[in-house]
Image (cartoon, rainbow, N blue to C red; front, side, top):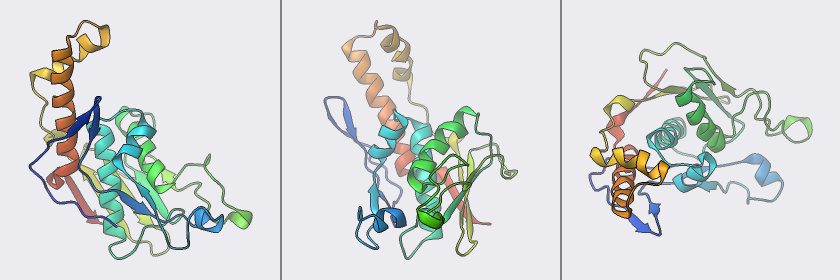
Length: 217
């Protein structure tokens, strides 16, 4: 259960090139973790955007968009309680091999636990089974923008979340410094300007709810 309001202040705290983004964590229960004594009963895992960045290996508007898609979808499905791994089916509108849906689905799966047929099969008798809860090309969206559906398997309630990535503002000319960073020709000033512009853009995605639409289907 989380809350996140639209913010205009996208200032980040930087220490040794690490960025402290302003976004609420996602809290989610895991029955298997509870059964095995990793968590106390009814206590959630607390997953931050920094955790998602570690899982993805980078921070960008796609990764931050995936985090917010998941956060908004779970908030809508579970307004009064923690979401529960193994009870959440994820449906992606696009294919697994798509550059956007591929990256996003990794983060969505990391948070929700939902996988295709190669995931955790549960404890004895399938308790906490997460296989076959992630599907690609699952529906035809009304928009080419990245769209995911989240379904509670216990109630069949479904929420569709769309990320209006085309509305994300550009990062300005400093974004053009990336090539110099990659080939080693960028100055320290150019590197700093790029990082500030890049992370400011990510923060906007994490803060601006107008970039997303979440509705029951």
